[in-house]
Image 1 (cartoon, helix red, strand yellow):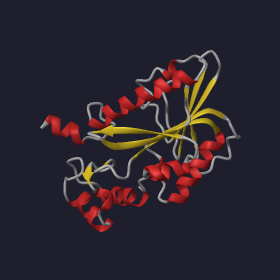
Image 2: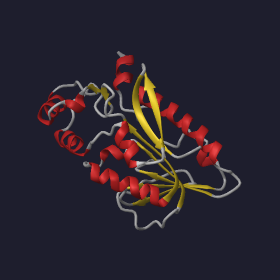
Image 3: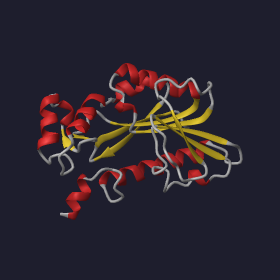
Image 4: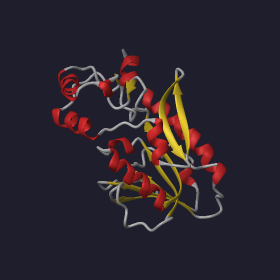
Length: 223
């Protein structure tokens, strides 16, 4: 039973399957990061929609000349001295000048913007304010929908999905609060590989595989 709970737990749970994938993803990102940046120079990172929890097990925040800025709709309270928090909108960042950051990072955020138009705005702003980018999102066509851990949930009618989330424990062995379920159903718009290539032209697509299937997509322009 404990294994089942870990399997369906949120990725914020340290023993969840999602946390395992996040750890693997972080390892790949760090490998690319250290290949691309000279650590003796100042490095500025913007993490769009991030938390300091994500960076807790990373070596990157320990770099002396490095700073990470978390951008969210609400104020975060980072504990690490190299991580700060600002309130802002991923689709419109007038507070940052062109090329303000050496790297813009984002993990599982761009799919939460309701429309493709908003996703385009976020992608353009990322490429405007950042010299490099590393943007991850769940793959629309992976059989297990990432937010609900429900097979093919992305293809279900909204009313049916709302019923399943709020009236049954099918999603992560719990019943969702109606307001939370409604909000997620409205805001999540999953992306496929073609759309990610369109949003980040000239970037590379890193595919995270599970059982031969692509679980998530990462657009980046790191060497």
